[in-house]
Length: 74
Image (cartoon, rainbow, N blue to C red; front, side, top):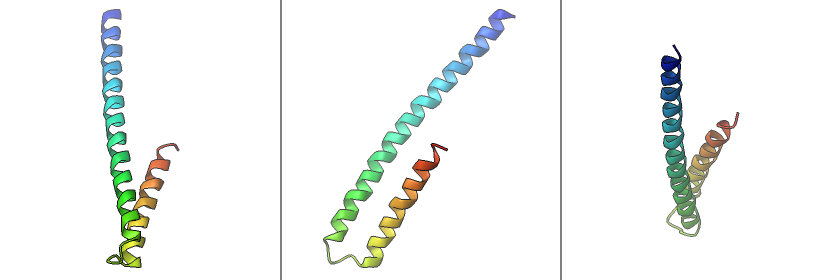
């Protein structure tokens, strides 16, 4: 029985490690995307071609992304 238990424990450890690696990659990609949106927002604020509504819409997106990120800690 010990060999089977050890195999199950090893399989679990491998799965957790894979989830961890995938999550780190996903979070890093999300951070890059968030920063790209924030950079674009700053450019939009100084470009008269964008309306206040356009800027508010992007600000709302960033707020929603922040809320989602914070929800991971709960």
